[in-house]
Amino acid sequence: PEAITIQELANRMAEKGADLVKALFKMGTPVTINDVIDQDTAELLVEEFGHRIQRVSESDIEIGIEGDQDAPETLKPRAPVVTIMGHVDHGKTSLLDALRGTDVVRGEAGGITQHIGAYQVKTKGGDIITFLDTPGHEAFTEMRARGANVTDIVILVVAADDGLMPQTIEAINHTKAAGVPMIVAINKVDKPEANPQRIRERLLEHEIVVEDLGGDVQDVQVSALKKTGLDELIEKILLQAELLELTANPDRAAEGNVIEAKLDKGRGPVATVLVRRGTLKVGDNFVVGAESGKVRAMVNDKGENVKVAGPSAPVEVLGLSGVPMAGDQLSVVENEARAREVAAYRSELATKKRTTAAPTSVEHMFSALN
Ligand code: GDP
Ligand code: MG
Image (tube, rainbow, N blue to C red; front, side, top):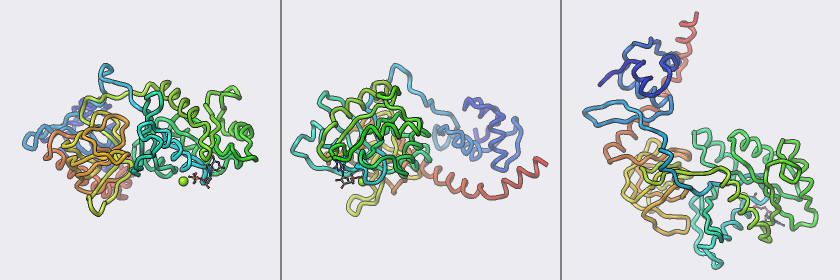
């Protein structure tokens, strides 16, 4: 159908009709629940409510809502995704490097380090942990602002010789806002002036109570420089991950988020994608933000070409129409035509959003209210 009533659309989205009316009102389109709206408006609403459009085919366009939940029996355990935050110079980069060095796959020899924005470590026990290699609060908040809550666990790095600094407190606040569990890594304990206990006490002022002081936040003393405490930190990450019971359905069309993206001179647009669920395969057609593409090749953090990438795996994806933005969602779709169609629709939507953000919609609201 080319048109649909608000009520019927609401039913399909499992939303309240009144909420749709309200949303349209805000967009400057006063309607009642039984009014018929056109295709474009309906699609705008569907997106607005965080659902996805399902077009049956170009000639027989229909708005349906894709089921967003995977059935419980399809879920399998997945690796935790960890972000390291903390004040500048407290040792984020050093710790990331030290943890990367514990990877049993890479081995002592070191292998080639491919910077793709994230990497995976295989522990001695065979568990996998994904680390986002972009320390920094901006990346974290920007991703969250774009609706991509990709981090399962935050490691807060605090230098034992320094204390809680402005960016430490910022990191605490971001982590709390995201509702993500935190592990405190008290770093630089090799330094003579290190005072880990003082850090634990200072954390109390921010309602971070570590286990030793009767709380439930795990902490660990490390030296990224001397590589001490790393095994214990990994153990605590795995323990925290177990509590979170992290799962995903690996046997479905892949979905993921862009960690970083760039235009590569030789290879064209490339994006590091963290797969959230499903399995991304070479040859898959996808839409990512307002771009589309077909996976031409995938490269992992060890610089190896891979054919598939499952939940929690970060991979560099080649074969994009353009450079997407960090946080953008990648979704595999059934064919190239569909990928282009959705990408075109999304850029149209972005333009629309920009134009409907004009003051006219506010005026509308006021005139209707008075
Ligand atoms: P970032 O800004 O948080 O990424 O911090 P860096 O990893 O760049 O570290 C800042 C400085 O602290 C560097 O000079 C590191 O060598 C040093 N550093 C990092 N970890 C340790 C540690 O465990 N012990 C000592 N003594 N120095 C460290
Ligand atoms: Mg750094």
